Image (cartoon, rainbow, N blue to C red; front, top):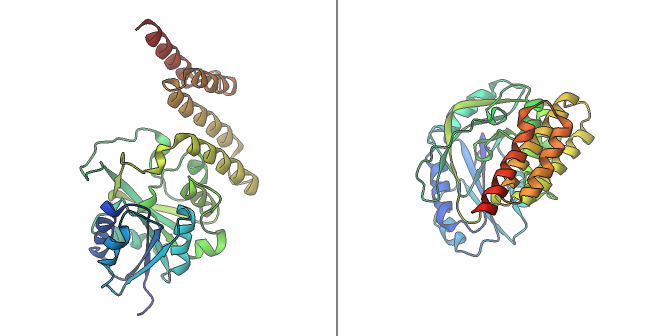
Length: 301
């Protein structure tokens, strides 16, 4: 087998009901100079049976390991890859047919390290969802994106293709993180490489189903704090100091919103911290008002 241009890494943990669709979406790509590396991270739901039904295709390499976590599974895929580029696909997501074909063209610029696309959100059954990301920090960006990326992770993971030399220069996924591993990696890559994107929803991103890691908000917040602090420590000149402060306030706003109807007093505390950092911005007061409304409503109802 000759060396492929793109290595597609699919990782799976107990997604027997979805992994077949993910694999088929890769096999059906209009761009066919690929290899597919599937890493089953200790699934116990019959995922191996589903995956085995595809192993007739000589381009597929299959690895089964004891459950070691998503970072180690993805790193295993990177280590086994032989392509010039590595594309990632989680087992519960799917690709549109022309995804690789359209994205690979943007690597003609040798400074580009990551190419991604927009996403179409789908529900657990695969039906399209009309989710609009209005937050300006979640809009796609191209070029030197470190300051924007430090504010929020706007790169849909399963849409990303990475130039493999990025891993040689800046490392792979941080195996000590349980969540946010892609954001951490994108930030590191952004210090040396440019980003580019295709302004089309070439990824079908599944949300709202059992087992989705992004539901664990407390762990996500802890990992997010660690990623931001570690990045500034390791790359002290990468993010403008004004952006660092703005990111801290923005993070407090978002968390105040999240906790205002779950743990209202915690939401108010986070809002007060935001007010101290940015007293003249009305967003800083939103969490307090939401928490007060929630407490008043539940006290009087």
